[in-house]
Each structure stands twice: as C-alpha cells, then as structure tokens.
Image (cartoon, rainbow, N blue to C red; front, side):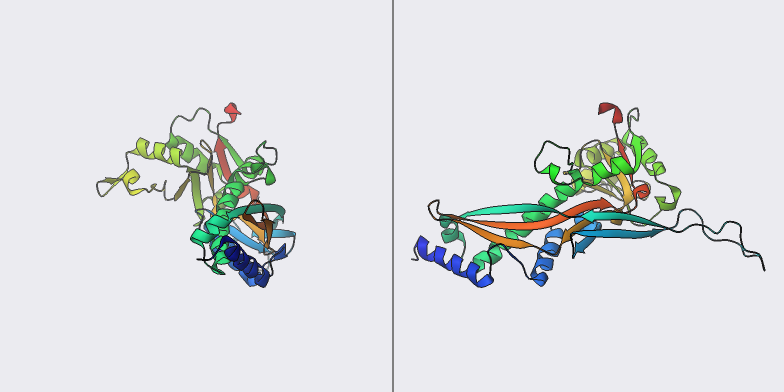
Length: 300
C-alpha cells in the first residue's frame, strides 16, 4: 500500500507537470471549465453569457422602440422616421476565489494518481458555477454578507434601473403577475425569450391558488410550474422570496473572463493541500427598460 507521503508526492508531481502555481489555465481548458460549469446551473444557461477577453467589455444591444414601419408616399419622406438606439452597459470584472482543502487522507482514500486534478477541477467547476449563479441573482455591494458584497446582481440592478412594480396591496399571485407583465413596455412584452422568475415558495403559492392540474396530476407533483398567459415561469430556490421579474432571459448578462487561475497552497504540517481557483466576473442588464421587477416596496 502506498504511503500518504507517496500519494502526496504523486499529487505534487501532477501539479508540477500541469504547471500550477498561480498560473492561468490554458484558454481552451478555461473556456471548457466555464461552459461546463454554467450547464450545471438552472438560470445561467438561459442568460446572455459573455466570455470576456479583457477586464472591461461592453454589452451592445441595438433596440428599436415602438412601431417602425411606415406607409410610403411617392416623392415624400415620412415625417416620423422612427428611432434606432444603442443600449450600452459595461461589464467590469471583479476577482473572486474558491479554495478547496484536500487532506492527505482524502487523497489516499478517494483519488488515484494524476486523476486527482481532474476530480478537483470538476468539483471546483460545479461549485464555482452554483456560487456565481447565486451571486448573479442576489449580489449587493452594500450587503454586510462578504459573499454577496462582491458584485451587484440582477435583482439589485433591476430594482434600480428597470420598470418597478410595488406589489403592496396586490393580494393574489395572479394579480401580481398581471401587473408585472403590463409594467414591461409594449415593445418588449411579447418577446419569445420572455420569462417570469420567482422563488419556489411563491411558485407553489401560485399553483395552490390556481389548483392547476395536468392530466389529473397536480403541477406540484410533477415538479413543474404552469406558464402564466403564455409566459414560461422559472422558479428557483436562490431567487428572493416576494420578488418577481419579467424580462427576456438574454437581457440578463453574465460576463466572466477566460482568465482562470489555479494555484496550490501546501501545508505539510497540517497534512493537506488547498487548491485555489481565481476567476474574474460581473453581471449586468443589457436593456434596462426591458426588465420589470416587482416587490413589496412598503416592506423596505
């Protein structure tokens, strides 16, 4: 049987051969790390993901508000030529780290040879993506929570720049969703990418209110949420309770640099290694007027 020290040396050899030590992952591997992680989440695969090649990048979205088509008149230019505008939001990445401690005992019992790095990478990939989805939703730089204070997330951004709905006084989920949909300007209301996002508990309340059933089986039993007036509903445990969003899913932007750094801290006396991953990311809303956010503003 190999000794702890022998296994430890194998791990260090694999780390040395990969060139770890605060170094960047190769670009192809970093992109794979990012994309596979995103696919482990619920909301990130639906949003606009921008793999950034620099610290600051713009999201440019060409928008045309209102009706643009005109009836032609021979030799006469129309008085109203319509408008085309650029909606520009900047992503400015912020550093975040993930440290995974690994004891010699865990290495010995669960990992074999060089595959230790692949195993740790897969664990880090999933954890990073799940944490980053939480931050993308709930981030607030004014929060006292060290994790959430890293970036402003979509909920805070939407409340500050989007179409706000005060749900105080709306006594049913149906009334809230009706008012939320009408808050979005007509130009964006019928987008085929529109989704309603709410917390799992609120979605359950809506289902209880509707008594919705499909083929005699309740939506709750099926683990689904019925669409509301043709608009699909995404329910999430991470989404804050009592907050409702209506927007094209790709209006939510998540930017992450393709620069992923991986290093190792070695603690021989403590009989462990810390694998440390560093990424750089930001979140934004591409077109502020295309997101409606509802919450009880009297409770703030």
